[in-house]
Length: 574
Image (cartoon, rainbow, N blue to C red; front, side):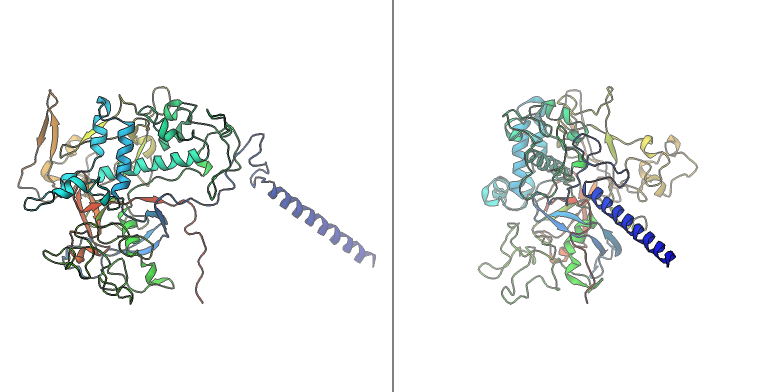
């Protein structure tokens, strides 16, 4: 009997101790104790600070979430060209954001206005910045057609404000995306009182330009190092108001638990990832929107167009017969007969004029074709990679000055590139961090990449050529290929300047060239107002030189999603 009482007492004591440990653990967790050390996180006295109140990535202006997944990239039907240009292959794309519409004339005009205000074209150092970013309005001209109205009005007239911008080459589109990244993050930091209110308008100048990467690398030197503009949390601004105001209403990525007297950092959760051109895989996945064809974990066939069905007219009762995109319907027919059920456009059309696809994206077929990030090659190398496929990686790193700090671009160190057609564009802007290619410090003994420029990896590099001598070193002069031994024997146009600064254009007139493919041609996707319905298929792919613009290619931006694939967990249907 005594033994049973002793056992009962021991069990009772053990239960009390266990309850005590559990309550202490819960109490510790409720105070934000570290699971690694037990130390208090976000202690006001100092120590490790972390944005533990972060909820999810905020959706940037103009963007729509595209939940990632697997899909069949490439055509599976109607490949009448039989050119093996888009053979089907299985790919997986991570979740990302994409512009709801194509970039419009108004959006691009805002970019041009900012450049003109911050980098006045009448100053010698900046005269080529505005001109280099300006669309080529002469793309509308035709030898046997009268299009001067569009040449003079399409970009700037308010009647075309919500029409997709054209005349923009691939390089200009990527520069617009970089500018947009900085302007969006600049506004976020201003709302969170890390930047002086309205400084983006009242204080912006060539020597006070906000750059996201420059701010993250060295906040104290951003915006020209002006501490009246770049504030720390809790610092009094010039107006006398504290810089630690409560987060903006509805914000989901704020760092309300961050300590005072600090700059915003990447760990704050405030800075959005960069706007950029979508990859070809992302664009095709978003355009096809096979999510509307899903049955359990498979697709009920692949769509021919961004919408369901095999026809370009709607089958819905309310709008039966209406065109679902604007495109060239036949020879001399760019819209249909006046006064009847035409597509409502002669050339491009106002964005959102046609229904969106199942991801909520507009004009993924028709209106204008769109630049994507990829360098063109005839095949997609799914054997090398089937996850977030992209051909075009050129890895760069921040340039470090002699003082050991990142080197910012100035008006004197700014660089310009002369394109093959003679157009001069800015490679970087003052206030940004100067970039240099990665070297063997980053690539030594790595298995995933071994050089900076990977555009021609496994297709077009020296190792891919039948002339490559495997016994020679990569940098051996004897191992270099002759011009006629290159994998892609494309024309080599060039522009030089003489001693007086006059431009000398060198046009490659050789009739022995066998292809237009090289590392400077980019993929564009989707059919345009100039194309027949055949090109509306999301799987179609074509290419064009990255420094040439047309009247039928525009673009839209994308942004990577950080964190979970979706906001809500998916479960099987009963």
